Length: 255
Image (cartoon, rainbow, N blue to C red; front, side, top):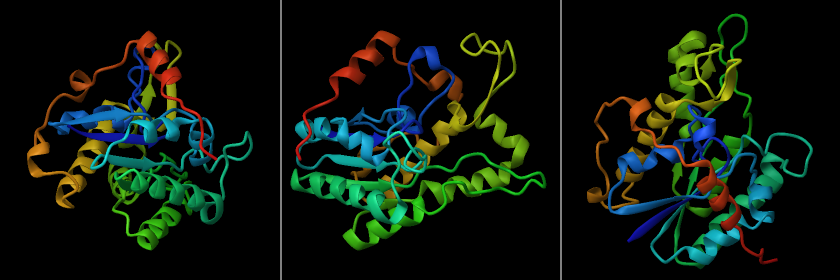
C-alpha cells in the first residue's frame, strides 16, 4: 500500500480530543483518499529545523518506502524568532527544505512541497495582511530549483480568506465565544489554527492538487466534490494515543 507521510507544523498536525475543535488539514486529508494510508507526523511548534533536529524526519526516513509520498509543509514556526526554531527564509529554511527533498529521494520516495496556509490578519480597514512574508516564496524557489511538485496552499488560502473577509474568516479559524465549547470555557480568538470547515477545505485543495498532477493514481481519490458536515466528519485522536504517537515517532538523527 502506498503511504503518504506528512511533515509539518501545527497547521498540519492531527489534534487530540482535548484540543477539539482545533483541526489540522493533515487530520482531514484521509477524507479524500482511499487505498493510500496517511501517516501524519506533523507536530505543533515544529519548524524545518526542530522537526529535523528532534528526530522526526529520521523516523519518517526509517519507515518510508520507495513510491511513497512525503508532503512537507513548514513556515508558521520558522518565522518565529528565538528558542532554536527560527530559520531565515532564503538561508536555513531553504537549506533544510533541500535536505528533506534529497533524503526522501534517496529513499526512493516522492517529496511534495506544500506552502503553509496564511494566518488570519486584517488591518482596521479590512485589508488582509500576509505575515508569512517570504517563506512561501522561498519554498517556491526550492521547488523550482529541485524540480519538486509544489502545492501552493498559501496562495489558495489567501484568496479564500480575502473573499470571506474579517468576519467570515472567524468561521474558518478557531473563534469561540465563552462557554461555546468545553475545551475552551473562556472562549478563544486564534488567528493561526483552523476549525473543521477550514481544515476540510484545505485538505480538499491538497488532494485535488495531488490528483491533477498525477502524484497518485485517480483511483486513490474519493469525495472530492462531496459536501458534508465537517464537524461530524472529523475524527480526533484519543489523548493517550496522541501522546504515544508523539513519543514513538522519533529516531536518532543522522548527521
